[in-house]
Length: 181
Image (cartoon, rainbow, N blue to C red; front, side, top):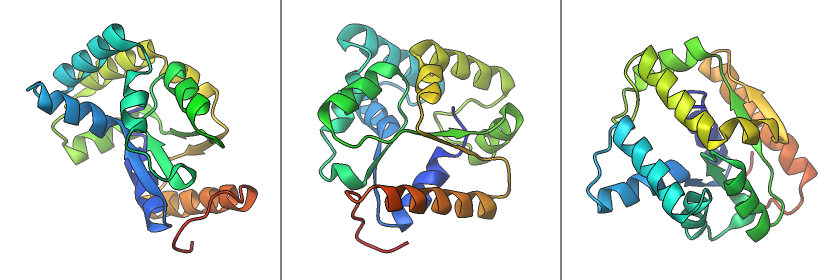
């Protein structure tokens, strides 16, 4: 869910040698090309319309075009089961990691980061949550292979992400990252 700590997860993963394919950036890039404003409501409406027009997996298809090293790529921002199915049908060794944080922590983080495409109050966050839940994000979370809870300090969370990623690396020899953990 928005504000749960996905960007911080990716930051740690990249420091370990992973690559990020951020689905939200794919949406924003396409929106900019179509001159869609980058506020939360406009981006959300655009993402929804594209899903209605081209299928629920359209953002997975567009993001997949950017993946050159699938075994070390972290795809950030799956929002529905169709996107997950697309990745599983086109890449091997898919591992799903859900990042969980409670609503109050997420709102605090969203307000602190003050991104253009973020909500700026509880009602806005709640609307975005409902929109993303309507896309099917809850199902993806329920299908996760791993879940990490982000309810501590940033340093503690980073440490826990590194522990989880090292555990996954140890169980998956196909993950051959360039720099060490």
